[in-house]
Image (cartoon, rainbow, N blue to C red; front, side, top):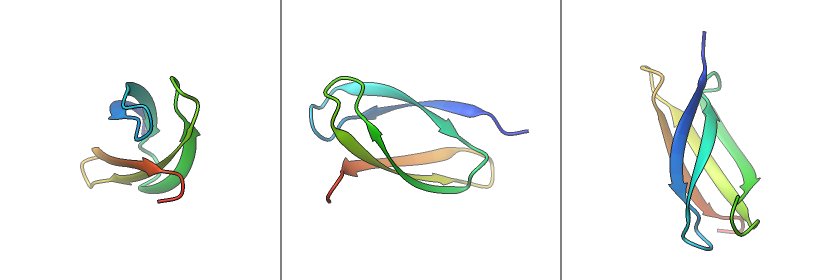
Length: 63
């Protein structure tokens, strides 16, 4: 059973550290989620390794 994994990422717009939940049941993800502080759209690129550990990369929406 896969679970949600809590990760801290830095918003590429305002620089604030925000906590996001990553669904580790999907091994490769690319989606947009608004920053909890400045409400700007962050592009999330997520990879889950064989041990179920996520690697999260964030960027501006149009990068």
